[in-house]
Image 1 (cartoon, rainbow, N blue to C red):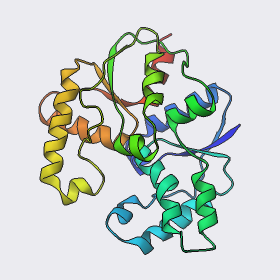
Image 2: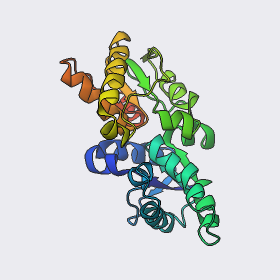
Image 3: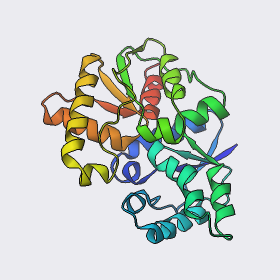
Length: 243
């Protein structure tokens, strides 16, 4: 089986260890991984700002980049849902690009979704004696329909204590351009989310989207209560290294 990694801008530029962990885990289970060099921003910032034509140009580049991929594994529910949900919408009136967008969308999976639903793997053999909590990004939950898969993978880690976040379905307030356009509302939302994270007493904050973790982690540091944060792939790889 061969997959193409869609790392996303945030992971590629700021959190490359999350991408490396994902690749290592996929290869550990016999999956061949490539990284199409033609990939770029998925276009979500311009899409959220109403620049549809500019977004289509970015989307076309992404469609070309992943045209020959069997599966596309995204490390962000937000960016993955852009490809899976919004690309077909962008080209619904374009007879040339609409079929290509639909074909792409059918190949897109969030990291934990691919492991659980495609590979049929929940337990990767990790072991870690610590308490963690999980923030599932809104687009992972609502856009990709991924809710149970990351939690199931964490609960399968030997020795790990999983503590749910109160009001887990609430947004952290990032939302890409939302945090720029509505910064005062965003600030209140991430403050509430960070308080809920601390309520769990967890030692590590795990997530499915590094942008959300960056937002929550930044707020925790701002409040003088920093907490280690990891993409779920990083947490699982650490659990394997500790065995």
